[in-house]
Length: 272
Image 1: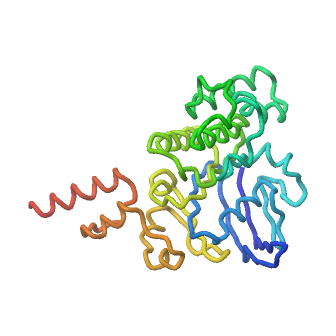
Image 2 (image 1 turned 45 degrees about the vertical axis):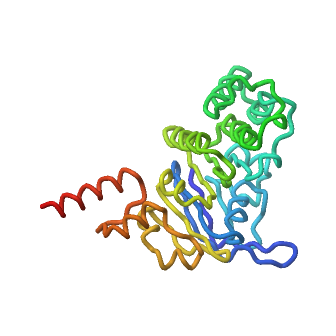
Image 3 (image 1 turned 90 degrees about the vertical axis):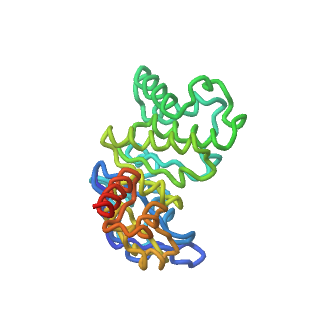
């Protein structure tokens, strides 16, 4: 299910123009990281995908649906959105009910709800916490409850807003597993993230935003090589990219396996 954004503009009621003529196409099954400083328009952009915001100008289409003509409830069958702050979307009395709320309201059969919820709880490490009130859990685990509630809806598009913020190393690795799982399922995954290392390691395409516009977009390795353009949006390249540049690699690297391969080539060249 493709996402097509054409000439998207948005002005908040206080007069702040947050998006300026944004044009983007995200194809079915793509894994996309959106980066940029605070106030760049990232969250404003993705809130148009599930109808939380409606365009001031231009249009957004999710598959064959124009978001102007569909409600948030209707769009929730196509786009699952995990908020940056999980407390904005948790309201049930225990973890299992929270995860089951979405698929139940999408009117899946009971057996399918059970299957989806159990799979979501397993993937997020929440097994054994089914009867726990989400607000008795740490913020780290509340984030996982919010993720599970969206995964259980089985939407073709999943949005993760700052997934790694406040997470420890174990849960950051768990997010890597979640993105990998969604990729294998053929789902479109979009992450807003300040953690460009996480974005470069786990996503295939990167969109850089600045002042309500798309400054740069394309394959990750191509984007992170544009150091001067990234600097305009106050974004540094990933650590491995910067280290590779300092070591004199002839190609841009953004992932561990790329770095190791390039390092071996460099060492072999120096020893010959």
